[in-house]
Image (cartoon, rainbow, N blue to C red):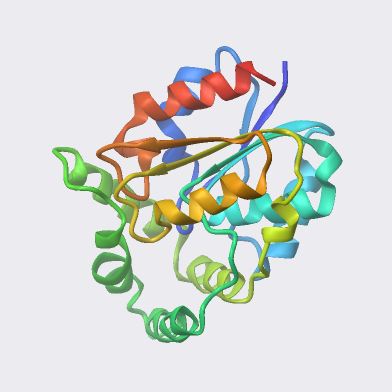
Length: 231
């Protein structure tokens, strides 16, 4: 059975994939890698590779997807299948770099919770009855990880490379999935990735924003299960 490595988004941990881990762990070996140990995407990817099985399926959401693409660049032959969820293959824009600089400064000044609460988390989710509970979970994950991780992850995302050439021509079984209402990593970015990877499957999850693993867990789990079963 192919082991699955899950990579969470910025200021998230394994709880981001809680419904999927609960549903799939009886059928597939699963590990979740932390992404707060250093401040470059390249080093984060190499750290995951040091601790991952020799061959594995790889799924990442948002920042986790960005690290997954770098893992693919560094060790394509080890990745037997790829799932990219609500992520972006492009380098950071100058506008977002400027915004990150302000967020880093605020966090270093002790204001991380406000940054997360007011500037980041409200952009994550579609409207729905579980929005409040999901936002509370996101704040709990961010608080547990803390400001040092926020700064390191912000720098890593700020300085990341464009990965379009990395994706081009990848032949492994690939799932590309996003929430229809994701404003951070919109559907058009996922259509681009679908074009870059021949034979990839694009699934757009209705009534979900940036975190479909929590917003629409059953639909997201079913898509991941079909992808894993196809490997």
